[in-house]
Length: 172
Image (cartoon, rainbow, N blue to C red; front, side, top):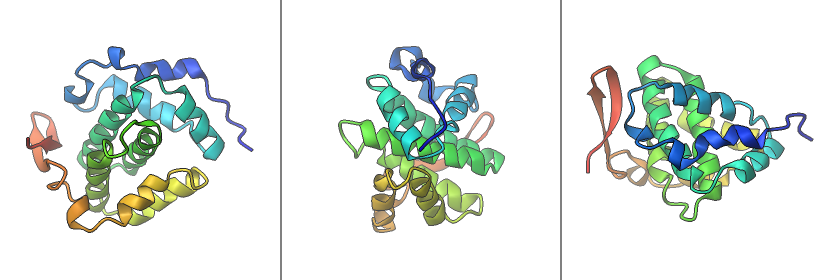
């Protein structure tokens, strides 16, 4: 049983109307830190379930944007914490989205980011599933995809740079 009690009001930062053009903001932004800190309160399956309930309507899109951004930040700063926050964000997003295919590109970016910072992506995805007491099965399903089907290129991204440094870029 979880000892963490998440606060529903904390999840209002994920309301889409409060995150207009968030995905295009410079990296990192204050919002990135707020979302990352919120996600680090998800420490087990019960907290994962609470988070999934508390995410506002269409907040899965904000979580997916955060996950894409976290992948770039992880590479830019060689930071496994950012990677893990992104993986958790995409796991929650996939759980609550109307279309579980929508978070797949972010998963591909996180997978590639893990490789780029010298971490085993399979182990990172499995660790997130274990943290959630097996509730993030979409992560494991992603690992079963062929290497081609989980590549960033297949998801419409490429490695590149913005004015501040490394960033995964949407190529369509």
